[in-house]
Image (cartoon, rainbow, N blue to C red; front, side, top):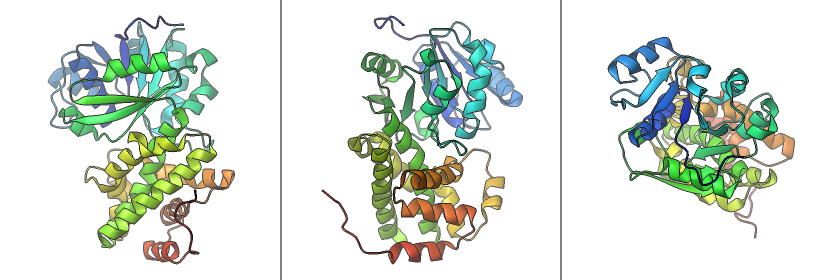
Length: 342
């Protein structure tokens, strides 16, 4: 077991999309030498030569301490911590490929927000199914309302780190915290992961409502009732209800449902305007996690017997080509209910 008095200083970041690059740069600007695993050779060359990631994080100058590399061996050699920032649908494959390069004391933290389609696992569960138990005891995740470009521009941001080990959580908190990046900790790893994954699906619904021209009332209703659905599922899976009132729940949900930088809201907006999912995704260079997660979330709700009507309607709109207006009518004319059960 790692020495709890030792501060983490040797970090690899796996994934150079917008969020991975922003987090790698945040740590590099704090004074750490960061090896960033970059899948795309052209992005690797650009970061190395021009100190920018024009494809995924344009307009942001990157620290000289950020070193782009092309292999897991280079990225992970001599590191204490690996920060995984890859899309959820490739998370298992990336972990499997990393596995031979992980030193026995390596710690893992994920900033990936999603639920695997085939297994309905969150990322900590994927790790448990791929890696030896010693790598999973203190597996952590970072979530919260955090657009990558705003973090990269040093706008004030607050996030939370989910980690069941209190001492390790505090080490991670100190590692990531900066003047403009405030980090809280939560010991509810499942809740933090579910909040981060499911808010993307609700954001598609909120975007669709905006695309249909339904106004602010509809958006507020979707956010509020979406949070109720997320909380129901979370509690059924062992999460703490209060987690969903925090940054990984309500905070991330509000941002993703209302912010113009939200890829998931943008997908919903274009769905509401009448575009097909195939046409929308064909024109996107970055992943909108909520599209794939809508399938997982709907299947998971049915598996555990939790009522999630908004999630269901998003699934049917995206994957069964349901008319968004018909989905809204179904939501609005459901059986009348008590809002909150005490």
